[in-house]
Each structure stands twice: as C-alpha cells, then as structure tokens.
Image 1 (spheres, one colour):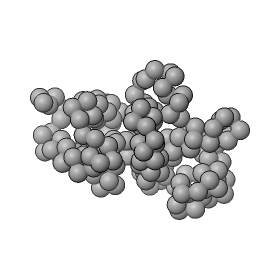
Image 2 (cartoon, one colour):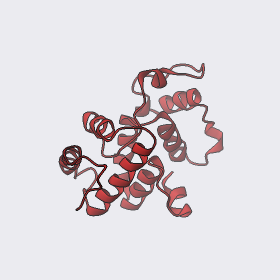
Image 3 (tube, rainbow, N blue to C red):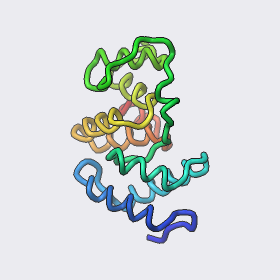
Image 4 (cartoon, one colour):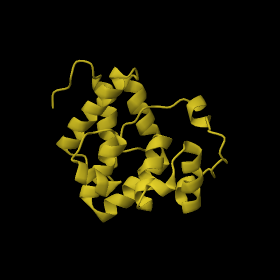
Length: 164
C-alpha cells in the first residue's frame, strides 16, 4: 500500500504492527488500513500530529484512532457526582458518567444506545474498547457500525441506529 506524503512510514509501521497484534479483537484488513489512514488525516487536519495519534492508540492498546484529550479536558465535570474509576463496568457507573456528561437516559429506548453515547462523549478509552469487544462478539456488522459511530465515519442510518 502506498502511503500519503504526510504519513511518516515509521509511525505507520508502528500502527500496523500494533493492529496486527490486536487482530483477534479487530481484524487488520486492507479496508481497516484505508479507514485508519482517513482517520489519521482527519485528526491531522484537526491539529493533532500523526505521531501523537498513533502513540496514544498504541500506548493504550486501542484498535481505533481517536482525538487525544489532555488531562484538563478529562478532569472537567458538569457538577454531577464523580463516577467510579471503572464506571464502564456497571450500569450505575454508566448512569453516573452519563449524568456527568449531560446525557439523559430517558431519551434512549435501549440501554446499549445510551452506553454508546456515553462512551463517545467520554472520548477514547478502555470504555470504548470494552464496548467494541462486547459488540464484536455479537455481530461483525454491529461492531463496524459502532466503530463508525465512535470515529464519525458516515454510514447508512439504519445500521447506525442498530449499533447504538
């Protein structure tokens, strides 16, 4: 695969090596590589360096590429009760984190939709990876739709509604 001029070969090699090691969680395909390049470009255009994007994903063991939030952004709260450190592991944790982020549970027909919204608003982290792993066991289509939702990749509306 030919790399764009703006993509450093060493950073891309690091990402490929990392993703290949994670293939059981998220298969590393040519399509996934193309989407990764698009995502890196989107983050680069938003002001995040390629190296920062890839380094953070590799460091945290992610299979996706996300905007890196600084510690000040992550610590910001809306005055709601602080969720437990492992909030994504329980329903009450999701509810507390959702309240902190201003997400109204009543607006979602299914709890899974609420979880997806909370994870997306919380930004990249173990919570996204855990939800993606869980969904991948159920259906490859739901996994792809949820991954697209987390990464703002346009998809058909029916597929997105099912995943969220």
